[in-house]
Image 1 (cartoon, one colour):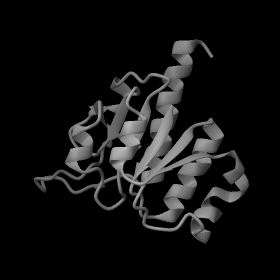
Image 2: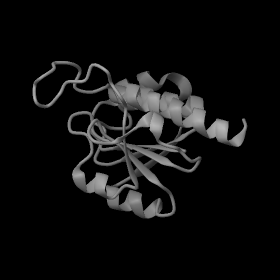
Image 3: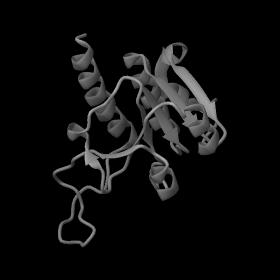
Image 4: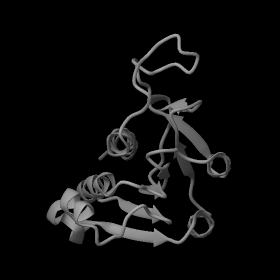
Length: 160
């Protein structure tokens, strides 16, 4: 499994996700442009001293990223219209793709993915304003939830 971040903007989120990837031995792919430099002190601080354990790849754009992953399933995450996370069956070579903190994934990227997943939130804000609630999860929290669920399923499938 791999985690891919499409044009992440907030270094602390990316650092936290990198730390989670290190803990689960998962590759982290960053798709440029980034909203920060890889030398950013906040990025480094959020990842603590685990950076040597992070398997990190950088891609100049989504096209190059997709070309390099052509034989793998790309699973896009969005707060809108996806299959709920717990109803999706993950495979060990899946790539979990998350969008920018401010805009999510563009439609063109979602359409270029194999599946679209959403994380169920009981207190979600409805677009028709019938219910006020939470608009979205923090990117690093969403990645952590997805990593845990996918890892749980994959380890169950393989008997580990």
